[in-house]
Image (cartoon, rainbow, N blue to C red; front, side, top):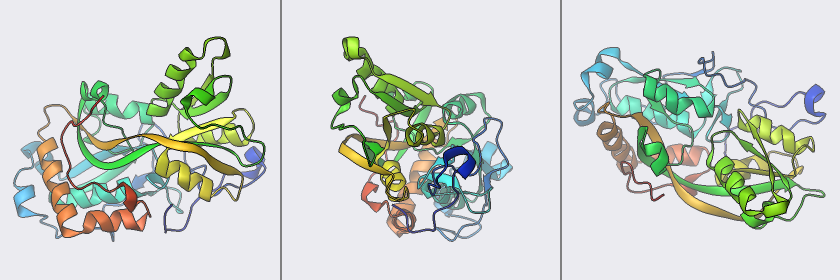
Length: 305
């Protein structure tokens, strides 16, 4: 799905075959790993002063600090993953975080964190923003605010040889499904399992997407689920080991997660609107070959369910 060179492989000792970009070459860590994203970027670098109209709206707390700490689970290429140097976070979210910060006259420090620890980390003040392919949902909006910035659905993938037929969620009944903990896919698979009666699905959850992918490739699971651009990228880079099945469903906006009462939501929205207007937003999406998920009108807390 992306035009940049794929990174990292699972070690042959673990898997026996190399699946490019499956492993991420660095474990996610709630403590904030050494994997961070450089504050400079070829994608969307504005002047040091940023967009004056946007920068003028930045709350004093963040303006004085000069840097936004952005949490991202770097196991989800092409949205976010660890680069070839083994430490830099790359992907759409990292590039967009840096471009948004630049608009605000700030820098972005993109920090690796486990997915299900990001929203609690925002609520506690550990992070300033969460950019990690979050679906904007009403449940999550009870804890954080969101500014929408992308649209994606969920896709199913299985082994290319001998994988089961899965067209819809109902086809998960009686099967073992691998998902990342805290995701929409986990919620969907578990909800479907309860509807299956005696043929309940077995839902295996993992701290990051790498674990879910490994469960499928090793035969522990029969079906994998991930956001549509991530699943497409994974299949493309699997050297024919995986294939997409069924139809993607549940298309909904990604949201940039922001602490409640921080004053950042309208600023982020204004910065994103400017990036869309000046073409930097689309340039970033095209770099990762996911421009089909582009949106035109960012919104604050736009969840439908």
